[in-house]
Image 1 (tube, rainbow, N blue to C red):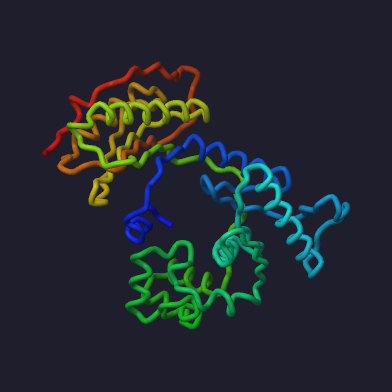
Image 2: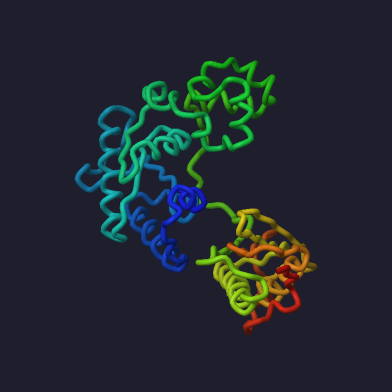
Amino acid sequence: MGLMKAAALAPDAILLPTDFDAYRKYSRLFKMAVSDIAPQIEDRGIDEIYIDLTGVNLAEHGDVVQEPGNEAWWRARDVAKAIKDAVRAATGLSCSIAVAPNKLLAKIASELDKPDGLTMFSPDDVARRIWPLAARKINGVGPKLSAKLESLGIRTIGDLAAAETAWLIQHFGKHTGAWLHDVAHGRDDRAVVTHSEPQSISRETTFDRDLHAQRDRVELSRIFTDLCVGISEDLRRKGYVGRTIGLKLRFANFKTVTRGQTIPAPTCDARVIRQAAGECLKRVSIDRRIRLLGVRVGGLSAAGNGDAVLPLQAASLDKTVRAGD
């Protein structure tokens, strides 16, 4: 559940400080535990992956090739159970897994039996378990698309499945209309992608308390610098440089603003990133307390031999913050 929604439901809740180093550590342990059993993994973030189980067998299954059929289906269930056990042994954490014919159904089905779920999902389950769900449960149906569907009387995935393809294309265009028809019927031919080049690298932090641009200037300066140094280290470790530097601010009223700047040459230098992000900050009128600060480097390319990261000492926000009382 998102923090904003949780805070609204439980206004007296005590919010613990974030620890992204710990989150990244456990994310690595989680993915390593999975890869020891099923190495074909598509990384979808810190706590989500897709796994291709084609041909994956446990030792007790023997050296056999899985063929479509009931036996292979239950072998896949054994593999999923082994993955859950391995993750718990490596991290002490539970995870939810859905075994399904494609990524679309696996994504939706993984939400059905949380927490600690293991869902075996076949095409025959679409009408019974998927169609009653709200259309927004489809990955890719965001608030705007969901609102338009509702305005047309489409509230559930079943409603969407019952709609004619031509009608969907008329209202949503050729590409989106055809896609909506396919996903409502559980069709998805996307492969599990085990490697892709990142488009950007970012870091952000939500503060334990909302910070004031003037009274908390020293703390904000330290956090800002730490974010830039952290991104610099991420870029160097992964072998990238970038040309587009971005800034993200979220205020106490949850309004979020972003600013970006393209620099002349790609970099992984923390000083250059900090300077460009500071220029972006100058273009924001800060008249409220700040609850989140983030920095992003995009337009990535492979780093050359001449690209280096210079050490960055603590900098000041004195010249980059315009603050109101």
